[in-house]
Image (cartoon, rainbow, N blue to C red; front, side, top):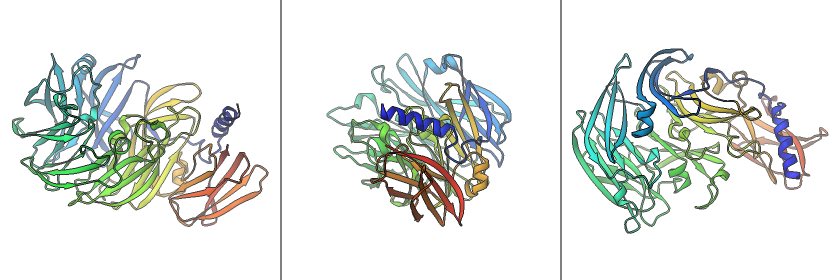
Length: 503
């Protein structure tokens, strides 16, 4: 009963405004109970194209659309890509929107009809009309009814000439002699098969990452080698031959970091690859709900070596779509990453709120913001605005009423670097976790020249220290159980506060 009472108290405290800015509202430029946007690609400073999913009252997919919108939420045009029936009965994989080197937008998908799978390329026109090209490949070895299909099982990379490399693990190779294989298919811009390769010798690998190669003519793929708990990066040339292998990629390990919860994206402007992946993961077979932190890493162009990393605050939703599209770049090569924060109430599934990091191309933090309110947020996708800031697409559920819907949140560059602007937009700039906690109170903030003070409910100062790291761990072992108030100051001004419960 004690834990139940504490969790109930925490919920009441949070809803009552325990954190300074909880009463503020996010800048939601779109709210919809039955549709959401994902896979957003900006055309100019204020207009983007996205893939939009429309659902019926039972949350079955009713339609998949292309939409053009402004960064203020105005829908300018739309075009149906799939009907609900076609999507539900035939489409087994659909890629995010991608921009070719000539500026055109493309998307790829796979359909399976009568156990035969085929791949397609969709080229968008300026008016959102599109042409569909069936690629020169059919197979009955593309999964079966006995295996759950995961969208990340198929990968795609497009080179500078408009050729596409599609990768997937063939069903016939699944756990043969304890190993798997990866199928590589290369198509030219006319849809003709111009190369293929079956790469064998992987164990338990049904999720992988396909990335463009440094020369823009081949690809890179992150795979788990047979008998190893680590992941290796293979670089393939334009003929799909392996030209380099980076073994044991730093801080990417199977299954929870890289294969279940990670997303990797290469910035075409500088060639560097960035990852957003969970850390402190449980042992294989454990409960992934206890995963708390994300590690944001950057890998160099030539050798795929980790050159820097930093920490965020998150618990990614289980196999959620948000982790698939959680990294973006603006025109200055700054990096934006979004995560869903760790549990702040009793419900392990719903209570995942927002964390957004703003970093330079070497992952030095320029700012980070947090949002906690009476809603639970599930990230669908994000996109960096070319001139700075980002858009975040979320599904949200009200904790008390279960009211559900979808929103598109606009976060300006000023919000990410200014304390007052962040507060006005409904975000906090410092966060305490885990909450409730036992022996350690962690204060996370990217603020400079900051310090924290902790008080008991009688107003007595019990702890004070300078914050010199992104995360400061405070030993609360000798504190009595109960509620404490923390306050963060910068330049001698209080900028954030909240309540923390010690169990």
